[in-house]
Image (cartoon, rainbow, N blue to C red; front, side):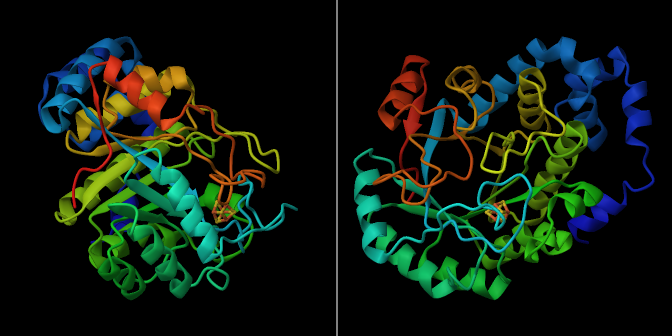
Amino acid sequence: MSFISVMQSYSRFDLEEYLGKISDADIHKTLEKDKLSEMDLLNLLSDQAIPYLEKMAQKAQKLTIQNFGKTIQLYIPLYLSNYCSNECVYCGFSKKNKIERKILSKEEIEKNALEIKKTGIKHLLILTGETPQITPIEYLLDAFRILNKHFSSVSIEIFPLQTEEYKLLQKEGVDGLTIYQETYDMAAYEKLHLSGKKKDYLYRLETPERGAEAGFRSINIGALFGLADPVKEAFFTGLHASYLQNKYLGSEISVSLPRLNEAEGGFKALFPLSDKKFVQFILAYRLFLPRIGITLSTRESANMRDHLISLGVTKMSAGSMTCVGGYLEGNNAPQFEISDSRSVAETTRILSEKGYEAIFKDWQ
Ligand code: SF4
């Protein structure tokens, strides 16, 4: 059974009707349970659960400390290339945008690595646009070999690959895979991805599984909030994470909740996700999946990030640049604007003030 079968099992389920009937008693019952069902997740994502945020926060904090201690793993992104053959209407790197295109040379990769290394961070996420002809596997392997000398963990957020291709990267030592479905709503997906290989919804949906089958230690998934109905997006992201966690015991599964930020092209969120619902979704994920990793990027403001430290989040990016090779020049167009521009040192200091330890390197 693949995840699409799980989604299909909900094709006749009237989500709106269910949401409309959730009562206070249902929320109470959900909050009393230790192990939550899929309907419990929906209860906690619903507007009816908003008056219970404080109670959800208390439970989420307790579960996070039980499973992860008072630690937050820090990572930093490095964009290798902004060439892209796809036309995603919400992205600054979309092929239709007239931006300067750039790909880092081996020398530039090394120089960026040395600059990032000064921060002390040992977890690196490398990103590219989606043009395999410009950044083929050989280029990625060369990049990895350079970066592997400087970092204890390198993960990828690149174009989807076949399992055998992922295996090549995993055998070299690439540690994790981040791949966002963007939206789980098939009709919205079709409208928002105008051209390119990314139009293939199913191929993308199955990508985390190919990564897990290839043996990546960590798999990070998510929807880009702002593209479709947020409760449905949050629900199917949660189900997807649960499905992966149950099926691939060797991989640590995480979810991210990126909210659409301003980018080249000027696309505005069609379904803005409020701060309150954003926090609610994080709490709901922690209660539904106590061992899931929850990742928070610098798309969120410093204030929001500081408040979420103790409420379920386990990984945070810090000191991020979202343009290609940004740690040296930083003058080409970013994929999206970040909201928290604090340095790694500042982020570490805030964590420490809140009694949390910043994890720079958690394994070898
Ligand atoms: S979201 Fe990814 S695939 Fe789409 S345009 Fe941006 S870089 Fe390309």
